[in-house]
Image (cartoon, rainbow, N blue to C red; front, side, top):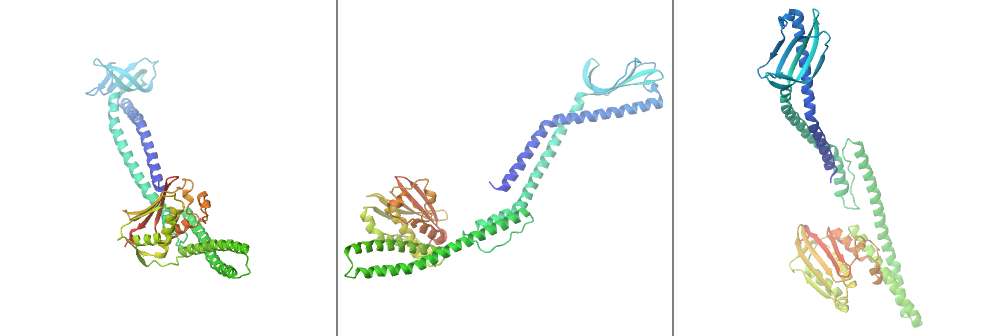
Length: 441
């Protein structure tokens, strides 16, 4: 999951949690607001009544010591004024029940006592609790809609801003890592960003890439130079050994030792040539200008290696249409690629086994499968089969140098061919080579 997606997801979840908490607390919050508003309104009404009393006298409400009471049509609000005992003192706002025309109604009531001309008066201002709560549901709906709109706007703003902030990181990944061919990374281009952390990351990756590139370049140069330098003394030694065979004074025992030396030199020569080939491939010293038929190429491989197939009585099947061609490739390298894969399939196969080469169109190209009935590769060894000089127990038993599959890997990368391997111990292996559309003639 991308970092931007994670940030957006976190912001969305956190805001949804806030919304849920707000929705849970909203009813009590609205009730508190309504109650506070009602209490404030009661106090203003009380002040108005007292102003009228002080200005016009208590007789404006109470005449002949009769209590004053005023209700609205639905009995939702009332004002009550009457004389009470001089010892009574009230200044409260609370919920209480009142009986009005035979109906008992729950009211929110302000009770306040005041003295005028040696008399104590009680003022009550009330509003039914049901009428106070009438505005709760509309207010909750409005508050929820406003909050939801704000949440959506903030999520959108977070998404836009995080996309803007993380854009340099995406450019660093795209231009410095994904779009470069390892270990050749090309020229450095600074990613424009105002974020110091991303600037530091960009420079650090560039420095790391330079170090890797220099290291690989030195390795390639060393392999290339060493291979070239080794070929001359090896050839000289081989010539001298061959000349010694022609001398009459050489004993049979010495000839046996010379043969052993010649075998060792041949192995060394093979390793040197292989390393030189890998170096030339990685340095892109080969042209890709050939157009060849896949069936024809595989037939050339068969002709080259048929003696080994006969030695183990292995059935070799090429199930590839004759009209399939590859273009813009190097015939010599592709021959080496298939030769090494078939050679391995023979080397690790069983007596009377089979090797089948088939092909099928896939999305984005053509897949060629090389399937054998050999001893297979363990799951633990599969990730390392393309490593140079990585020799497993099977390789040691077959006197292998551990360079066949690394050559296959280098040639595949040179032609942008994707390799996938399936194997099961005791059953066999399948190497899948996917050639991209641009190579299909």
